[in-house]
Length: 245
Image (cartoon, rainbow, N blue to C red; front, top):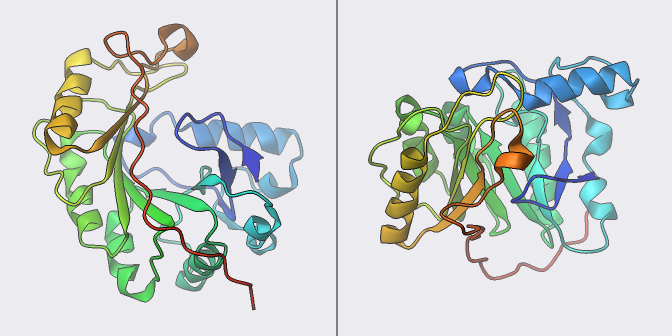
């Protein structure tokens, strides 16, 4: 576990690292760059660089946290990658269901696999499930997400690369929007952001604007019309933590 600088979470937990690129939003993957840096630093979990790697020794980490946390699961990978064994995905979900004092945020681009596995997974209230949608072409991922049994569903429009247009937000609890950052960052337009923002306001859906991005994301900041938008979904009824078997 590590404390996170990601604005919408508190910590990260990576029982899985590494990934492969499947869509246009992956072009400048921050996780790939970070993995190669950690590999050069001889970090044990990144011996394989950005090659997909399961870390069974990391599964029990949430049990060691004394205080409840908001946790981004697999910030350095995609839990529903096609090469991750279904048995491992179930183990991750088992930990999240048992260590239920924490809120877990799981994000995927592989919504087909998510939907396929949905019946085999147990969705306690503390497991938030999201999909990444970088252009309008990938809005089908939202339809897949909507069909799952996740109690809290969210969309990450990051990096937002084009105008999304109208979005069916039925059944969605939370929306994140952000521009791409770092070298070669592709531009984001304000009207793309405000289009999504207005749709969220109309539907009373929590809206979080993460950043404008760009080569210097700190300079560009995250103010939208002079205001920080950091809304979070309403938490469901808490579930008491269970003792691991």
